[in-house]
Structure formats: structure tokens, C-alpha cells
Length: 101
Image 1 (tube, rainbow, N blue to C red):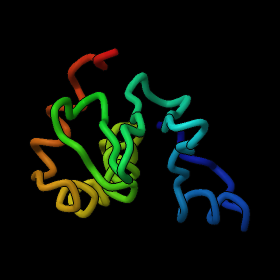
Image 2: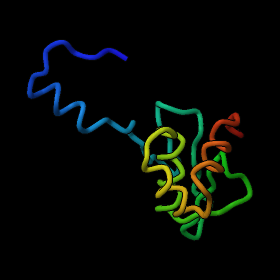
Image 3: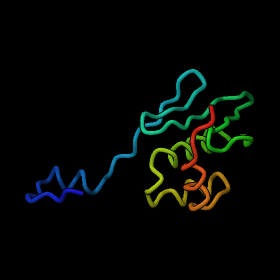
Image 4: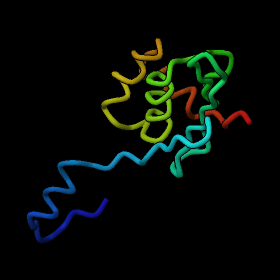
């Protein structure tokens, strides 16, 4: 970690709002450049996330699951994990496993 020697307004703004990598939804797939995990639309408003095989989630739950995959170290993981019925520790453990095709 590099700590700036000179703190400008822009430095403070970036430090106060860390960026969560984007999750894109295209043609029934949720993907991010920050992870190999993905979510696929399976019909009837349900999605399957690669690190949660066998579970069908709503679009909002799939988005939360993808947020966990792209930023597992953020404090928000606890809230996102609750949305998919897991603890933060369980979610981080599952995300650490390789993506299922």
C-alpha cells in the first residue's frame, strides 16, 4: 500500500470512496473483469451464479453474489452475503474456489 505524501482534494476523494469493479449484464450473463465468476440467466426471472452451483437467485441476489466475487474484502460483503442466505465467511470461502463453467 502506498500512502501519498501530499493529500490533495482528489486524493481524499479517491480514498473515501474505493471503487468496486463493475458488473456488466449482457445477453443473460453477469460478468466482471475483476473475477472469473459469472452469473447466467436461466429463465423465470432466476439466475445461477458460478460460485453457488445448484442455487437459483433473483437478479438482485445474483448482483449481490457478483459483488462478493469482485470485492470479497469489503465490509459490505456481510450485507451482500445476507441477501443470498450466507454469512460473510461462507461467501468468502465459496468465492475463493475456482469458477465452475
